[in-house]
Image (tube, rainbow, N blue to C red; front, side, top):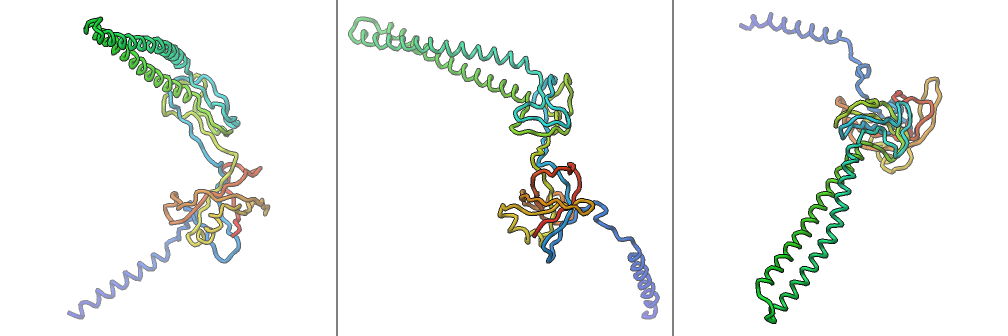
Length: 299
């Protein structure tokens, strides 16, 4: 029985050896070539060099919030949209007419309220006078009750007027909000990256209108290993300027300073558990948005 196990043992050993040989012969995959993000590593150096994408500080994708057709475009692709100027204007002439009618209704209700309050005041005075006359025996109870009914009716008219004013004001606010949304604008200048609609095209809520970029500042997202992040964390959290250099082809270096924002675990890195932050700084003349650059951060 023991002699029969020997051939099986030899065969198993041969299979294992063959598997090891085949494994050693497999080509090694370069994760960097496949586009997998690699966090910056910090050794004992005084600076760390890594790559990042030179990007605008923020991107704003503008969607339509009301229906209508585009009647005006105030900035084209490649232009700067000035602060306070709507990127596009959607026809709201019907809304403006409706707003005018509602404002007329509100003004009429306000005028009516003044008259209703006067009627109520007179009815109350009359009621008090009739109570006194009834007490002195000059009039019958029925007359007092009739005046009391007039007072209640006048009070209900005032309450109804107040409710109508509230409903009209609410409708006016809704119309004004729609008019505001038909002309989306911003409190700072933005770069128009792409317009999705042209003049006279019809839009519905949810459709893309434009993509705007805040190019007043630039940023590069930095990914670091945990050990490197810990080494930089103290200086990152002090809100002091962070010195760095942008390394250009040919050996040219551009020295700059910025600040760290959005210190967090990088949610886009599904391969490595790494830490990251946005390096924010003034735009560099000559660099193109979306350009991959190498930067050296002083540790």
